[in-house]
Image (cartoon, rainbow, N blue to C red; front, side, top):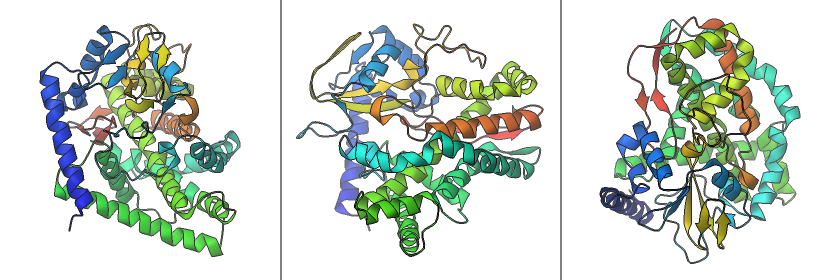
Length: 414
């Protein structure tokens, strides 16, 4: 049975989408991002938005930033927060968020405290120690593939899910189930519009919560060298609460594989569309790190971020009034012609003078960025060594989301 909160969430989602449709028909480009056409190809809308100026104000009063310089500057601004001002409704939380209560949705000082507890798991020393395990997992998964397979379900999903599960200390992780949970919970970020979707979300959340409740209880009596043990120790030292322990585990699991899953999937489609770039990577596997950066720039797995201006913020491209919601159009910033020459050209040999914003910026810069980059580098190098070609054998199924850019299935032949 659905709770009152569930029903209210559905009603809010439906009302928001109906309002977006009306605003889009009136010419609001921010509202236009809530459409299937945008989900399949956001770049025409983003380029149209860019022509309106680096700071775009929608009819609803929401602002959007499209330039790399303004996005970079605003992400680092101390008055740009992830929480709205007190008394201001957060219009983007149309459904219970599985990450609510985790530090990714907190501002200082709580964000600083919780991030400090988890940061050691993603430091360079840990990445060096993980490289061998990731390489072994990558080749084991590739060994199991035939000439035709689904990239998402057979490789792009299992690799990062296995890695983050091992890092956390989840034994015998069901990668297919976790991949499905990731998509279900990510879909909730756009709002859930039917009872069936809400039930599926609630079931996924409850299952993951039950898993972590059991694992945390085990680690309290028999700690290991995994991240859950580290967090349980922090709980005993009163550095985190029990609720924070749960939401942090949720965050690390789900955010720990979503970006990499979609990066590998996006790369697969891009290389199938640009065989010259695939041939280049095959000839020079050491270009794998550069390929990772270009895929992240060209098709950012997280194409938009949301912040709230707590005071008036002046940027090079314009002014953000106090109290407004601001969308950082990462997909536009990463194709800003002022920063990236020929931005719509996919080129793994591109000379990088500035960093793309696929991992955000400022104090909320993605904690798992080093892990995602390492996984991508190892995966791309191994794929280049093993796959003669990458050809699609059917139409990839795109995830219809404004907040996640990726695919649910990609049938390929190699």
